[in-house]
Image (cartoon, rainbow, N blue to C red; front, side, top):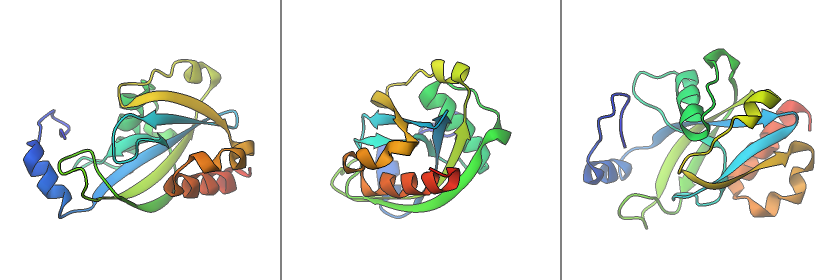
Length: 165
């Protein structure tokens, strides 16, 4: 894991840290005309469909992390004032990407959302964190719920309520 200056915490130290702390994350639901962008993650702790973002760095606001994570994972440069807070979620994953991978990983996730234009939607370029992506019609999420983990189901339920779907 690197900080805002690009300094890497040695993997052994980061793995030990995960054994003792809860990681704060900000992930963003990217919405375009009633559709939600999802990416299929390439790495643990959740190699499945998910939203975009990442860990907070010391000194960052929620908006700072949302902006940085969205740009890093999708290429979109979105102004901080456009993000809205959806909710806070307690995520306890049964495994993690770091050694030992069989140990749990605990995150407190602040979910935010942003509505983007068609022009911005065409500019999405996913990075190596994801193997594929899809635009999910928010008015038809029930059709796909069996494909999602319980944590994403809770977030999808909340965004549909928030936006009236």
